[in-house]
Image (cartoon, rainbow, N blue to C red; front, side, top):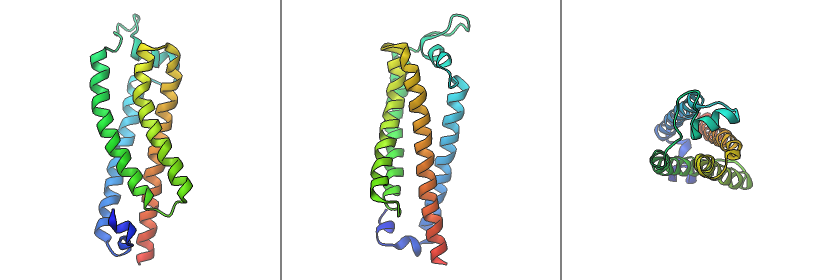
Length: 162
């Protein structure tokens, strides 16, 4: 990360390239996250409700406490590391500071909300299906925004270096 602060990104083509490759990897993660969501559910409240509470017509069981806990345990660590890395990279771009702060808060909120939403649907109230849908869409949108912002910043640095 030091190379952003010191301006070395203009001289360090290899580091620039490695971060762009990382962003490509994150873009694949972003895509697979969306595909997994839409494989299990849609943006309709009924499909989210059926996924978490089960559906007799489809012979599916409600999500168990253990199942939700296992997914949450893994996601809290993995999403935390991903969001930390992406926001750290974003902090080193030319984006205005208020936008950096706003986007950082939004993506952390979205990641936590997306994890909490399944629990809320399953154990609090079925109306949280709309919160789940909104949290998923906000997470995907903010992840994409960070990927694009950092990638464009690095590509502009490469152009300036030439």
